[in-house]
Image (cartoon, rainbow, N blue to C red; front, side, top):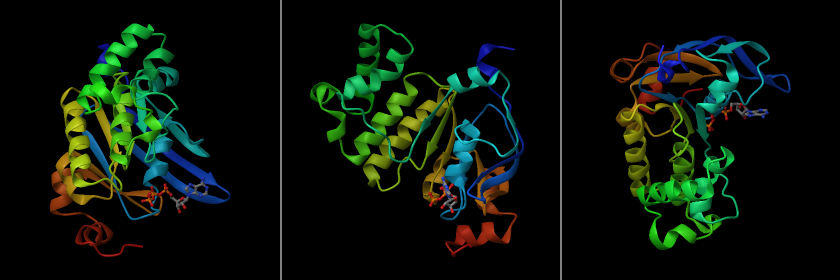
Length: 241
Ligand SMILES: Nc1ncnc2c1ncn2[C@@H]1O[C@H](COP(=O)(O)OP(=O)(O)OP(=O)(O)O)[C@@H](O)[C@H]1O
């Protein structure tokens, strides 16, 4: 098997996460293969964030099992996560973007050169390179977080509502970067509240309800005809509880 394929399939069996006696997510049974973009949708509090974090391995499982096509340590090196509210280090824009490469012991010169290329791509080149990242706007922070995740060339990128509370322009710019990454072969698993965005980006849809996967289907099929009544109601914009 070529190196590029070894992360997948992701196989999830009966996986469940509980906190303080409450089930945040699960039990989940799921198999994901190595191509395309999976969009995670569902009502507020249904468990989308918990599902992403569980799959990424940052929530301890109470039950069940998650396995990848390669050993767990390697699987974790091949994936990255962009959080809904990314943390900016008290350093310049270019130093923030270069940071993951520095952690991987890439020389400072090479890391900064690579980070400059990414900064240009997200519209933070030139004078913006040396700006303190903590002074960036919400949209700029999200783009920086995306560049900082993609600079390591992850095979899989998780994104938790990366465009929440961003304006149309920032959202479009982020979608462009994501589409380019997907076209270059990065597997994306992303939650969103924005149904237009889900339709633009999704190859397949995971519809989460009450901490469980209520539907998992090809995007076209889901948007044309959800299997569940809750899925239909959700797409109509009804309140789904
Ligand atoms: N650490 C925690 N301890 C206890 N409860 C939690 C914890 N994290 C999340 N929850 C609860 O678990 C449920 C699922 O939360 P989660 O954030 O995964 O949902 P979500 O679908 O991402 O929500 P939203 O759309 O509002 O972002 C919610 O009821 C939430 O309040």
